[in-house]
Amino acid sequence: MELIAVRFASLVDAAAICTIYNQGIEDRVATLETELRDPDERRRWLGSRGPRYPVVVAEAGGQIVAWASLNSFNPRHCYDHVADISVYVERGQRGKGIGGILLARLIELGRSLAFHKLVLACFPTNKAGVALYERMGFVPVGVYREQGRLDGQWVNVLIMEQLLSRGFLVDASPTLTPALSLTEGERGSIPSPPEGGEGRVRGGKSATGARKERRIGGLRPHI
Image 1: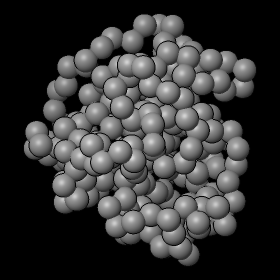
Image 2: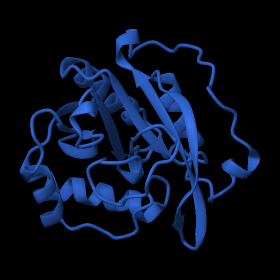
Image 3: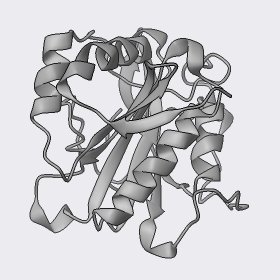
Image 4: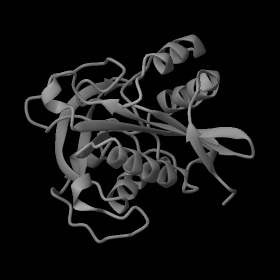
C-alpha cells in the first residue's frame, strides 16, 4: 500500500472532505443521508468543531483519500465521556487498509482526550466494514430495526462500541465474540455494498428507545 500520512484537517480541506462525503451518500453504503453537501457547508462544519472533537484526513501522494472524526455523542454533560465516530474513504481507495489506519488514529485520539467509550453505527450489510470494526476492537451491542429509509426501503442499523479503558491494542487482531447474531433479514435489508466499502461509521447510544435524528454531529445514534 502507498505510504499514508494522517494529519489534522483544516478549513482548506473542506472541498476534498465534501467530495468523499458525497461519495458515501451516493453509494448508499455508509449513511442514511441522501442530500449532497457542498464545500461551504463542510467548511462551516469544520469551523464549528472544538479541540475535543477533531477531524483528521489521510493523504496518499499529496491527495486526501479519506477523513475521520470524533463527534459529540450527546450535548448533555453526563455523556461527555462518550464519542461517536465517522470514517469515510474515497471510492477508489476502499479496501486498501486506509479505514483501519484512520480507526487506529481515532482510538488513539479518544484515549488522549480522555473518552471512556467510542460508539459507531453502520449498515449490517456492510460486511467488510463490520469485520474491520471487530478487528479494531469494536463489538456489536444492538440493532435499530427499520431506522430509516433508503431508495424506498426500510433499513436496519447496527450499533457497535469499544471501551477504551480495556486497553485494546490497535495493531492487534483479537478474536472477538459478537454480542448478537444478525438474522438473514437484517443482513439483507439493503443491497450489499461494493467490495471493500469501509464507508462511514456513525455512533450513538444503546439501541433501546432511541429517537431518530438527521442532524450532522452525532447527537443521537444515526448514520
